[in-house]
Image (cartoon, rainbow, N blue to C red):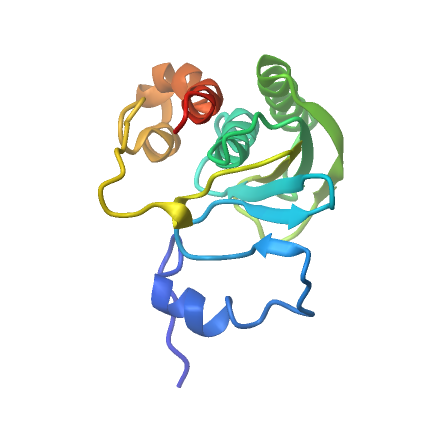
Amino acid sequence: MSKVLGLGKLPSGLLERYVLGRLGAPSGDVVLGPKVGVDFAAINLGKGYLIVSSDPVTGSSEHAGWIAVHVSANDVATSGNPPRYLQMVILLPEDSDVRTLSRITSEVDRAARRLGLSVVGGHTEVTPGLRRPIVCATCFTYAETYVSADQAKAGDVVILTKTAGLEGTAILGGASARRLLGSLSVVGEAVEAYRSGG
């Protein structure tokens, strides 16, 4: 009998066993692919790298557009580079109205403008079987160089620029955590830390 999966992110053991070994055709251009603890990929373009990250927002219908943009942009920024481009996938439950779509796309637009991101594509549909909207963001940028968590070693200094667990608290905290939404971005801090030699 197959094991029932729990809610939330998959444990690293399941990722390693069922996901990370099933990555399609290998490519020498992929210099940083999927790994536990690494939130973006790096693809060698010859004269630099494409840095890309995708994330869904599934646990919150309130502010899902805003949160999705910031979560994916933050992941790209951990490379030390500001994100520049954004693709969005918006999946809506069957009973959704135009107000729901408008709210999500307005949140995406505001967050993208705040971070200087251009929305370059995506997909939007109403689909059966959903209880709340699912909003997925893919953020990417071009970079001459990057840094990643898998390069960390013993003795490195870790600087915490915001409260630990801020994204999760903003998502799960609902209305009581609304004040945290304006603090979700770590793009500026991540890029500045990298430029300062971090």
